[in-house]
Figure 1 (cartoon, one colour):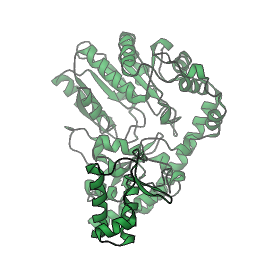
Figure 2: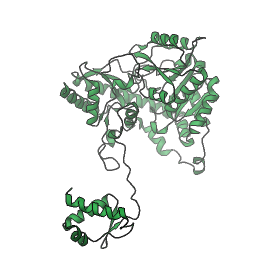
Figure 3: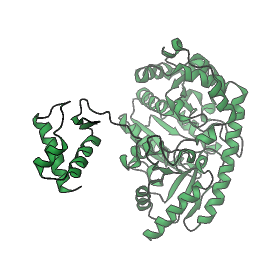
Figure 4: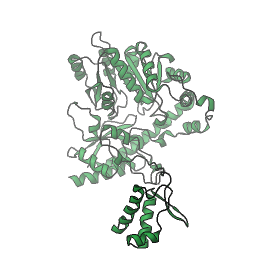
Length: 482
């Protein structure tokens, strides 16, 4: 911007600031400003147009420029990767901004989509949009105006609780044991608070690596996260025993099936031993079982839940975020009798109730045969995308490779070569608007030092050449840093 144009802008702004020009009043004419400030006509016009774009002035045809009478409403834009911190909470916010390639290009606000990611935590919308589920969403009766305006049952709509008691994956529960929550995140928060309150203890054991939001969630609740190593072979039960011996724990949160972020599953022998430890008379604790990926096995039948082994000491958490869609915000807890009232009361204090229409929609679909067909199609698509991901990754052996075997769920661990600086690669990729879910995010503070040169890959988002494109960018960045 030229110095003379800035001079005109400053002059008009000063007139407004001093009150010489009030809202709705006409700005001196272009000719007047030209003579008064000794600048060219085009310079004045450009300056007044700049002030108009800023919302300070408005142009009226054949009349000139006027001080805007009301403040222009700022247009909202979608959150950008650059708006978010590079910490666990900011990373979590970034991962839910991931969009399918079908929605790439230009976004609804006219700006280009800038987030490229293959490690987000949600199932691809194109995988979830099966014919059964799409038909249900399109053809379900519209909201009844009167019913839509009321609160839902604070514990969850009865129809949904009835379905969950039968098909929710937990054993030996009644509809009265079910509390419907705003997704699994609220279910986890409620479970941690109530378990710690009942045990009069602030310590909660979590897996390391594990869901990266657990540590900040517990800290926000005023609780103490206690990391327990988890490897490809399962939970380090010796480390768990040592922590229990050192000081009591109120609960342990486990993700037994298709573990987030590694994708591996907890062996049956460890499930039995974990149940035995939790049930010890003097050092017992609550088990918070996070079974979000139920129904997404592709290679074998689902093993029994930990809840089925020890229902009286397990808070079983489920959700439809991974199988129907995260926007529904429908999760649930199967609560032991001794904690039921406390969970219900805290749920009411947190959010009062949920959305009755959505809960009844989910109940109707899950109770129909179409839901099983829907899950079968989702599993089939996940299996195909996993095979495609394996083939694409073969061309990038110089960068890294998938480890373990894909058995279902969303996540697969991709290990990079040992000499890759994952932290530097993460920062460089962010600068290119590529979001990595790197291994360091999944380790809580105080966890044993382990290799973090790996990243979480969301199989559902490995569509077409998406993985190849991302690995190509990473290989380029890694070679530059070498």
